[in-house]
Length: 155
Image (tube, rainbow, N blue to C red; front, side, top):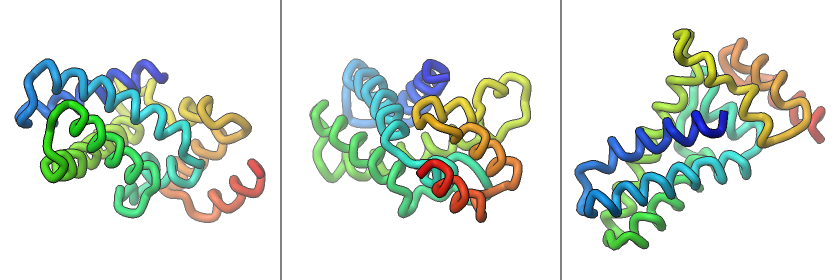
């Protein structure tokens, strides 16, 4: 699951960053580092943040700690590759939004080729009973009361 996420993230990031001011080599490196940053950000997220971002009907990046963290990390990566701070901030904003939208699309897809993108598989990063709870949230189309119950169960 992690390799699928990383591969998808790399493709999305490379597509989105293709026309930036960095060299193609720096862009490729930034995309790889950005994919790793996504995995680290998901590992640091909690159940409600992940469900809010990838599951259900909402999934807005605004105010979601995972999305905000990802934007910051992408901006730092781009700046480290030589992009100016203002351009990096703008690039990371749109790149993170597109990346999250692409991930959400995969996780909500019913297509056979997308079956590997299952919210319960992400829970290996979280531990506990989070897998069942995330699947129930997905089936409900949103977080609802289930997240409150999940937080209580997970402690």
